[in-house]
Length: 88
Image (cartoon, rainbow, N blue to C red; front, side):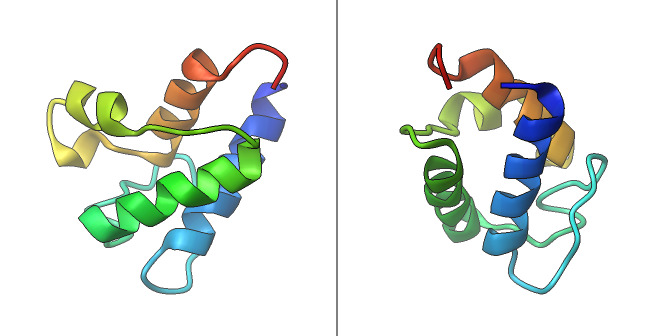
């Protein structure tokens, strides 16, 4: 999957899971800028599964961030690119 296509899918999933209407951008921080909490993160994982057609776990992405402020749309797309099953 191309990077632009993956970013589009991540942006759609973030938009669909956000607590309020938003047009996510790569630099947006999920917690600080978009208001995500643990329930929204779970909804995001489900939305990503729908977009990508495979199971998605966000635990490693969240745990790898030095702080919640580092959880950005861009870092999520990078994590997904590194962890997608081949052929996706």
